[in-house]
Structures are given as structure tokens and as C-alpha cells.
Image (cartoon, rainbow over all chains, first blue to last red; front, side, top):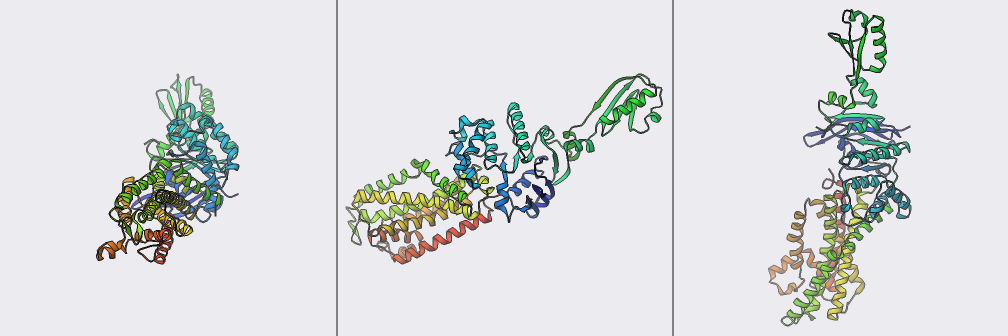
Length: 307
Length: 253
């Protein structure tokens, strides 16, 4: 089956500035994919090329196997975009703006009615359907952005910082909604500054820095591969030859405080405890430390995601 | 062709100016009534007629044309700039709409506004000065043609402009002077020779005189020349507006 989104060797320069050095991403149909990177890493440029706002210099960009330039009518109809920046409008009420949006995608008002009503209800905007955008709170504007992205019922949903600036309660509600959409079969491409969001929602994430993807995998496998998880064990008895007992492990011994560096603390902990108890050690305290995707991000890019 | 998308955007463009008709329709109407009452009826005592036409009647086609082309231009230019500045343009550029469809919808929006304004002032002229229209269909057809041409110019300006200031500069420094110098209030025969020659380079001179011919049956310029220039402008500026949209440099990135 053709991937929902395929990006190969994507390059883009803005004059002298290199924005993308050759990005490679493949997103399966139905996958929840996170694109993480510090500011200026190339996330928005990648999305903008994919959606037709920016022209690429080089590379392959396909949606369900079709080129985004030569088959733009097909590819754009498959994608709904919730942009980071709020749209403003001075003239029309919310429901008409949604009908316009559906219309641009070839759906006449009559056919869009059910979807528009459903989205307004689901996203808690029903009471505001006759209001203008300027009358909405920040959280409502964010929900409207999402409704606008979904009005033509796209197969692929691109969420660019979908929870930026919203309160914790709404953030959790939106996460729930994104899960629902994902379970209903939508392919979702998410960019976010909340690493917890990616860790919680995404099947797969790609970390992009300085215009290229530097790591890709499931959040779990990334933390396992690149993370620095560890086990700390305090012992009451120090007169044992730990080096020979624990020869299979890498560890440091600081006066009976053993620190193990391991990528799989859950699997290794029982083995270590077994070996130590068999050697007659008395264990006082056990602690596992596990790195998060944030640590992985930090170790790969050298900076935090909000920098 | 994405017909639903194209008609949605066209209706949005038309609906947009109708929803603020106090800004987009009424002002032209009021200023034209004032021009007719103040300029027409007071100056008529000094200039009783031009080419055998009472002065008040003589200025009406010019007023219609001035309103038509300024409204047509400002509709597409301000709508495009507004969409750019309010962040609405990505909604169109990311949708399955071609540059041709987007351009045409904008141009039709401006064309409708220019035509509506032109026809309303035509009716004001009929009511206030008992004017009879020599060729009603040609008059409306010509108003639509010129509206289309200037709406295309507006779309070009809207794409080029990056601020309201730039847009106002283009309109105030070119469009308004050219309209006034195109012979709204006078026949160019009243000007010295050199000024007459300069007027021949002003496209708005041909638009005003073309309309004056269809309404009053008199014109400084040859009516066929006016018509041909209007057609050339319509086609030329439409093509440029679409090409600029397709190129996208001024509206994307």
C-alpha cells in the first residue's frame, strides 16, 4: 500500500539560507506521526511544501502515491490543515466560514451541512455559530481552526501546534479528540512544542534539526535507543567483588551505591537483583531512572524543544 | 475545473462587499449625487453645453466611469491584501483550486461591484437629470467590460502590495489623477494642443468617452477605439493577474 505521505530528499533554500537539506519522511496510512524540532528546524517549511504554500527546490513529495504538484487537486483534497496561526475574518459568521471552506474543496453547502453541524457541536462551538471570529476566545479560535481542517472530511490531518496557547483542560480534551480521529482511521501529522503530547499520542516521531531528519522511530524505541536510562541500587554490604558478579553489566560503584547505565531498565533489573542476592548482598534500596523523549531530543539536537 | 470551489469563492467575494454596502456602495452614490448637484447644476450656468449636451448630462458618464473603475479596482485589491494580512490566503492556496479559478473569482467579485456601482449612478443620473440612454445594452456591457479590466488591475495591485499604505499610494497617485484627467468634467477639445496629446496616452480617457458615446451618443474619441482599448486592457490585465497568481512569488512564502 502506498504511504499516506512520502517525502524524499526534500530540499529548499531561501536565498543563501538552507531551510531543508534533504528531508526523508514516510507516513503510513492511519499512522499518528509527530514531527519534532526546535524553532527554525524546518518543520513548517516541510508542511508548507506538502500543502502547496511553498515551492520545493528538489525532492519527492507524494500523498497516497500522487505528486503534490502535478496531481494537486487530488492531493490537496486528501489533506486538512489546522495552521498554527489563527485565521481572522471581519465579515462572516463561523458557520458560513466553514461552508466556504467546504466549498473550496468542492463540497456544496447542502452536502456540507451535516458535517458542519457535527463539528460545531463536537468542538463546543454550536452556540457561537453566528458569531464572528473576533468574538471568540483563544481556545475557541483554536477549536475553529481544527473544525476548519476537518470540514471536508480529509483522510490526512495536519496539526501544526494544535494545542499552543490553550489551557490544560482543553489540551486534554483535544488530545482525546485527536485519539478519536486517529481511531476512526485518519492519518495525522502533528508538530508540537509539547513533547509530552507527541509521547502520548504518536505512533512514530521524527526529530528534525537544521533541515534534516536526525532520528525517527516510535517514542518508546527512541528513548530506548538514545536515552540514558539507569538503575541505582544501594547495598549494605560492600565487601563483594561486584566486577565478577555483575560482569555482564556496565556500572559504577560509589561506596556501595551502584549505578547501572542501561537502555532496558525493566528487563535488566530482575537479573541484577538475582545476581546480587545470589552473591549474598543485602539490597537496601532500588531506583530506576528513565529518560523521556525530551532527554532524547536534548541529546540529539543539543537544545530543548522550546529553544 | 472545481466549479463548486470557484462559485463559492466568487459568492464570497460578492457577499463580502454587499455585507459592508455602507462602505462599498453608498459612498460612491453620495459623492456622485453631490457632483451632479454641485458641479453640474452650478457650473451649468457658466458652461451651458459641450458638443450640444447640457453640462450636467455631460459629466454623468464620467462620474459613472470614475465610480465603476475605482470600485472594481478597490474590491479585488483590498480583498486580496486583506486575505494576505489576515492570514486567510493559505485557506485558498492549500485548497484544490487553480490559480485561474482563484483569479477569476476575485476578478468577478470586483466586476460585480464596479457594475453595481456604475448602474446605480446611471440610475441616479436618469432620475436627477432626466437623461435618456442612447444604447442601454451597450452601456451596461461597456460598464461590465471596464469593471472587469480594472478589477484585474486591482487583483494585480492587491498581489503586489504588502501594506495598506502601498495600496493607497498606487490608487491615489495613479488611478484618481488619471480618472480626473480623463475628461470627466471637460471635453479634451477645451484643452491646449499639448494637453490633448497627453490625454491620448491616458487609458481612462478612452473608457470615459466610450461610455459617454453609449449613453449620450457623443464622444471625443472614436467609439471603436474606446471599445478595442477596453478589450485589450481586459484581456491583458486578466492574463497578467492570473500569471502573477500562478507564479505566486508575491503571495506565497
